[in-house]
Image (cartoon, rainbow, N blue to C red; front, side, top):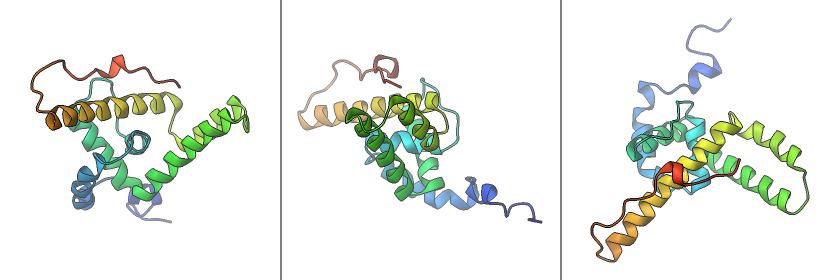
Length: 152
């Protein structure tokens, strides 16, 4: 019998022992591609809501990267993108893609929300970088999460 705290699930939980890893992951999050960021958000296991701030997105994605590792984040993103390409190339059916996506993501509705948050987060940073590079101040605000439609 396993004692408390030694099961694979308990070792996978984020706790005080992961604090340095979380700090390092926060710096990494901004360099993740949209799909990788979505995987990290999903992998965190923490609640996701449309009204999250950019800081909350970074924190939750950092938890996900610390929890499963950068290599696994990238591998899951690659598998998800490959499924979409296979569907476009008529290699698999939509039903097969859905069944395989269920193995990658905790739920398809969470996938949709995580992708929406990652696209919103990326657009905020792209707009800010463009403005900074071109000396633009003020102007229209970055788009909201609700304005970015993501197909399931």
